[in-house]
Image 1 (cartoon, rainbow, N blue to C red):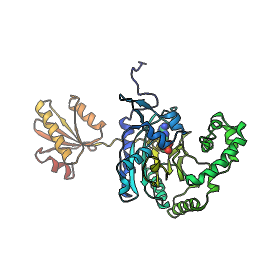
Image 2: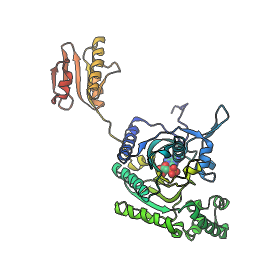
Image 3: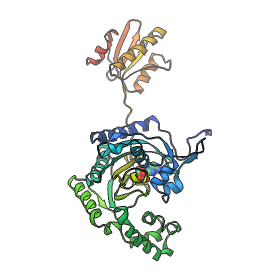
Image 4: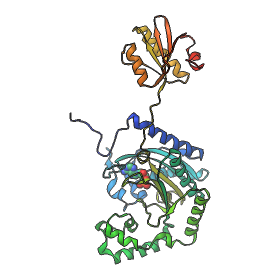
Length: 416
Ligand code: AMP
């Protein structure tokens, strides 16, 4: 086999047309469902000041410690390819004074994100997320609405085997007493923990719930759980989110071990997992991040949101979208520059009338053009010859002469 000199970088991939069709359906479905609920599109740059993620995502997270693509620009500034979308959107919210708008500001996005992770099925270094955020509401209605929208998108797309896991981290202040209790538990079992968890007892004890080390898992099975320690308004908020999901018929399981890899979450957290995926089973997830906007220099502003991985949805669907076919292929019977030029003009007119139309760009003879039209799935072929034009129905093989002058009428008027 010939060696390829250039290849897409490790952990990245090319999106070829067969995969692009399904990708397009996923993006359109999500955008339509979100737009109907008032989530308007926002796009932020692919890179930001590194500090935004250090502050926003958190110094002790895997993302910031190990996974960022960070580089220095020619002016000596440290920039980072965005590993996630929420911190940039909160930056934009503050920068553009969106707190002056009617609250909450409901936003949707889709695009590429970058994390230097070990590549495997469902985990890439450049991947694509769709996401939605409601910034400026502390109401459990916002949590329930957003969770319901992701459930609706996955259902509409037909993603099989989805389970919603739900938890709550409580407010930042209330969590401190629990964290002290958890650290105590971890220290009491220090010898049984993995090195990584042991080194992060102080910095990020919650991540111990995420460990796949057997010793750590055994210790975590008996660890105190945050959802069981929720009190006052935190407990009420969580109960309301659950009641709203029940009323909307969105099913879920409470997962007391649920934690997420970003520091900014408060109260509600959730994760949609899919049993058709291997080790990387999470399709999408998110939660409430009531402290993030303030952390990034804005006024205290409660918010909630989620992100879903487009490649994970594609893996779960495991299907290809059939090629769309063509309404018309415009062929030339006897080669002449004039006829080729007319074919191009007529195809353009057909397209302006809303039909899909193509011409041969490969210099094929008539037989070759008909074969090519068939391969493209063209329903009809307009053949330009010395006498004028023939319209051929590709399924029946019937052919009749038509006037090129009133072609649009001939085409849209019904029978071929
Ligand atoms: P997160 O931003 O970590 O909460 O991730 C949200 C979603 O993005 C996940 O549920 C995955 O579907 C997707 N995702 C995260 N990291 C990757 C990756 N490295 N490759 C592919 N998809 C990813």
